[in-house]
Length: 222
Image 1 (cartoon, helix red, strand yellow):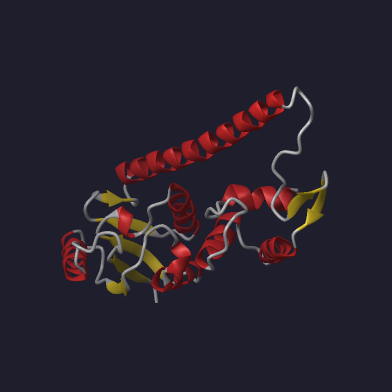
Image 2 (cartoon, helix red, strand yellow):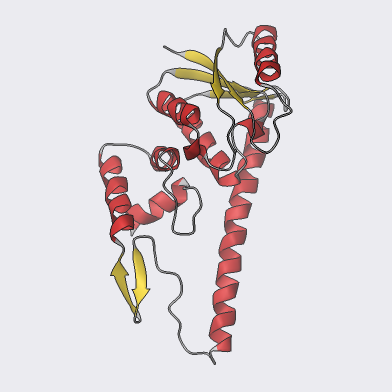
């Protein structure tokens, strides 16, 4: 199967946008722009905050990895994700597998130059969010150090480790994730695909966020 998949989700926060309205719009869009006859998949009402909490989304990610999807069509981008990190990982995965994304409301088609421009802007916004978080963390550590009279402080432990009496010790649960990441990489999976798999499985980073390929690379390089 090399299908066009329509993705429909009703948010738990706002259920005004019915599945029927979304599906009709997706089918009309596919017919108008000759995208193909879509296989429309309906997610049960669920929050958009976490990809891993949605079984239909997990199945879609798996099908993309298996090369069974050529295009994904949604009513609005927020039906797919709300988090910039999730958007980053989702776009990376689609690009790795040559999958085109269409959004009816945003008029987004990543097979076109203008569509890729919009995607690029979204990725830049996601990158900006990551860098802002990093800068805020660094500034907070500097303030703590200044408050301690310039004395050295421990800072944040890397994933898989924690501070204990001034020394690093392994966190068994996180170390299993690290081993899984290395095993998937040994099988030839890209950091973006590994991040998508972790997110689909509901695995969180040490800060409770979704995974991104940069974090996976950092673990592999450490």
